[in-house]
Length: 613
Image (tube, rainbow, N blue to C red):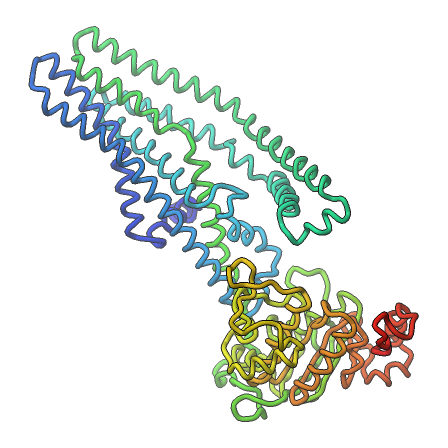
């Protein structure tokens, strides 16, 4: 029972407060209890004042108590709100830190692509953006305000015991019943169904289309602006309708709550009135007990459940993700048996300092993404000799990008082996191996940092950085200290093609720092044909001493590779040089001819030959 209680999201939220900032958490609780107790203290002070007037006693003490209590009630509220806002910001920072560590910690990336974790990831990433609920600094303040009322109701009930033992119990039970009655079909519970969450996602998606710059061009070009606004309005209206329907579910329990509260308060105030009329209850005590009887109502259902749900949801999501992400993103221990030596930091046979090309051998490789419904690879066999270049082509979904992920060891194969210079990749130290790999993916990294830090995030001599930029055709792009982001006063913006050259320079700089394998996944997709051919010639020259694997749909690029591999249905169906595969008249020749048909002229508008194919 205790473990179940402690595992509830609400308790997890309270447990996070001291971890986020112990000092602020202590101050938050002290102020909360003080604010909750002050209304009961004020009621007592009011009774003492009435008693002093009745008996012509000195008024200094009662007035001082009332004055101090009143001032504290006014002063502590804004102080508590400020503490709540700061504590909420610290909680948000703590959760973001924990999420970042949970996301970055695993050596693989399966946890980031696992659909089972996607909903928790969305909640954990976006909880402080104000789209799905109030940001954390407001949530903590909402929780504080609701708890202050709860403490105030309990304090009032304690004082009411001075009148009779049964009166506070009746009121506490009656007002507490609102939590049970209204919680069962409360707003948040019924607004958090799968249908409501779906409507929320659709509304948010339409909203992002309207406000994000990436979609702005095509929204206008294809006349979708009005459609986007209508879609957002319709989805948001549907969301409101579902939320209103959830609220309507509260009508019956609300009626029961009102009846219970009316009966309980009627009994207590009837008893207070009868005692006062009979002379058993002096006026000063009547004033105190009447006020605290009203004050017990502060424990009623208010915004506490809603505020706690909003604050606890991201906390619970992060706590669920932390243990779930580690195994989902873990990598197998490889072929090493228990008691085997520590994984090798470098591929066997590589030169001193970790330099030199590496040979790759795939045997019986099978792999399917977790939660996927098919195998991407099914018995894949492929050899890439050290120092050679291999181009990989095939239809969408053939596994080209997946092959690059496996070689980077972002995933491990389900069966079969990937050998690096004869050693199972799983027997190599992951971090050390990744220093030997340079890659450019389709969704390459764009850092809002200087050009120098974009090309060499881990650092490199400026001469190597400039040489890499020259090899990527970006020698005159910008000064190395120029920040590549327009959100800064000294920043600059880049086109898609320029960004791609920076990404290429990052890989080429890594080669200069010792990488022995270069993986290029559509590395020139945002460049024109002329620029692509020139850049790829430079890439091959810069990587002539390492092993290069290229994934591309453009045959003007792949024909330059030493060998070309055609993937289909998870297997290699053709392998050879461009001339060999053209002579074979198989799948590669068919794809090549289909792409070549786009070019019907001998030269383009600049007088350049289309013979780049």
